Image (cartoon, rainbow, N blue to C red):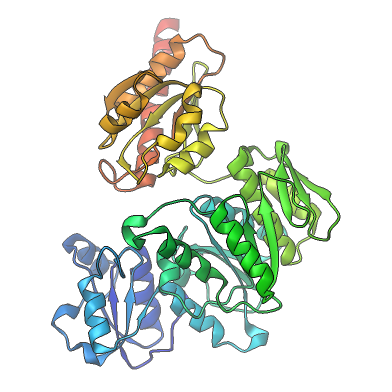
Length: 475
């Protein structure tokens, strides 16, 4: 844990007691603050109390006594309208901060000689894989790397700060909205497509939140930024003109005269102005596909900026295991391969998975994001059949009608069984059943992780059934 001593002896409100809120409450208490933690959900409050976090109804307290409100990233700050606790804080002049802001202030309070390296990663898609890959490369290079933030453990649950550590922090737009003091040694912004507009209101606000990752950077720091979409490309131009920090453009769609490109399975470093192939992604099974090429380019640029030898980076990419729920191999039954890409919660992320396979039996659906699956039209010819589940099934069926064969499966278990039967009967060599929903999960599941775990459970049950039939036949 990283104790937060800034508010020692003072009252601090913490609202939202999921993973980051609980970590913030514990870190503040460890630093001597009087913590008043609250969540509107009865079950969440009970879990917090069971975890040893004292619960106090902040709605009935005098807000003028609070030194700060620590707001969990899932709580609306501005749009569609501020949550009531945000309104209360603003009305009484209570500063609103995030767990990331607490972490940033703790780092800034250290003497320069004791400051750890901090690497931040954001982007609409790929930030979890890129964060994990950067941490993996640093560990392979013998560094004390800690991975947290929007991935794994909350950042304040990490081991205490010290000069030899490297903190790799995945940052969502919600977290960046509430952070003003963070100064990153390496800041990575991968890409931007429309997402979370229900919370930001429009693309202007969403892009502005993402840009905050470069706040406070100086001449010794690095900005690693994708140039394959117009939002990031424009930001890259602005950063280069501003010359406040080093800028490393990255791309998986074009060769860059200066930057890091990942094309045709090769990572090419031209930051020095001379192009050099520095990694072969064909030897990295967890980094297949164009989207992972972009992740690899970003991770190379980031770790190279931190002084890691290029040969170590290339070798570490080949041993990277990938992330659960992102093109994760979920098993193979009688020649049919199952791929769990449950983390694809929007169409853009699903497109990246669909681009990897020439033909798939596609399981999709849930709570659709703005735009639905219209942008997936170029991949419709790759879909042998679509198995639709959840709230969006009817709308998706309307889009696919006449272009792709559709089964209205309704739920994931039925979809897995139907897709397996069709793939097995197809006679194709090694057909692929791909769960890449292009939707959020909360209509039928607790989270995308729960959805992916359920998928793997249903695949395992099919495998057990197939094994039982074989054994029964042999008997």
